[in-house]
Image (cartoon, rainbow, N blue to C red; front, side, top):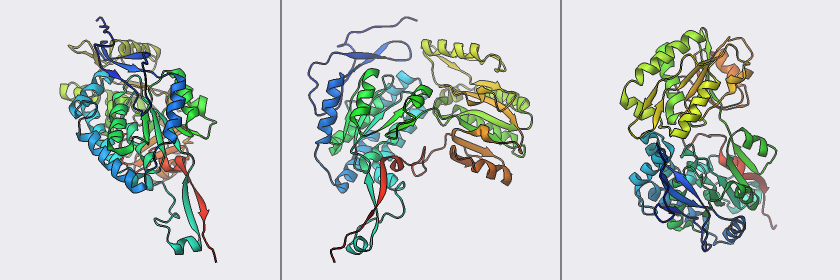
Length: 460
């Protein structure tokens, strides 16, 4: 399959969204769709422009909390239902599907989720504020003393990933808390950032949010120009920023599952299936390892048969399996080769008319909980099954963004709940991909963006 290269004028151009004049910036990166064709050009800003744009943002007009609340609600509705940058919601879904290969249903759900989260950003951000902070500061409260919440800075930078759109449901809460936000969109999928930033801008928040596309060498400039940053990336990103208190790193999730020998096997199959393949299998909350109390090999083999039978249905494949470009498929073949010693059998591959492919999840087996593959996370659907014993030390579950525990054994549940490195714990028939706006993801964002201080006013 060949690739089609088009000139700058023949495909859409995505520019920065900022009140600062961009002049004649001609540096860009080409965004390709999953068939290899040029799909758009993303203008990339030089480092000096970034500094100027962030400094200008800091000097923007100050809005009251009520004004921001009204604007956020309007922006959420516009993002979900309106025409933004000339594209209606269906256009937007097609754009994201075309460049990521994610199932259409996954992107449509994210469209709804991001719109709702933006509209209700004030409500959701308040959940992370300490209960000791009063809703209103009356004269009596001020005089007797109370807690007060304050921002740790004025500008938040968000370095967005390209493997999923859901992360954009989080950062509008920063605007609710009074921050101005700088978004560096993904080079792989810039449309979600563009649509949300433009919706916010058109809704009255032009002084509170900008989108600044830049090459990788400009990312550090954005982080240094902001006061706080949220950065998405892999293990290298975690290592790079792990000692910086001003950077919240969203790295590998290493989400896991525990299946007790008392749990119904059919329910377990459905739970593991949804946790591994939901959200296209690429999100940080997708299960990458399942610990089986009992015969892990037998469970894994039976699960592989369950997956095979279920995904013979083309509608189920369309619902769960992303489409892989030729480049991504070559990479996937390399993973199959690298981990062939753990894989039961080479997964089935489905070739599509577009030249893309869909692949069955990698189903693997490890002998013990201390093998490195237990912590393996790939940006495609893959799962490693591992045997464990109820009475064993459970430290192998950490670190994990999510752990779902499928058992009714109170002592096992209690032991797992005491592991502090588990960020979210779900009990019973709850897949690891389950998320709700009122439930913290990796803690509440307000925990990172604010702090509480004592406050009292008394003039005698």
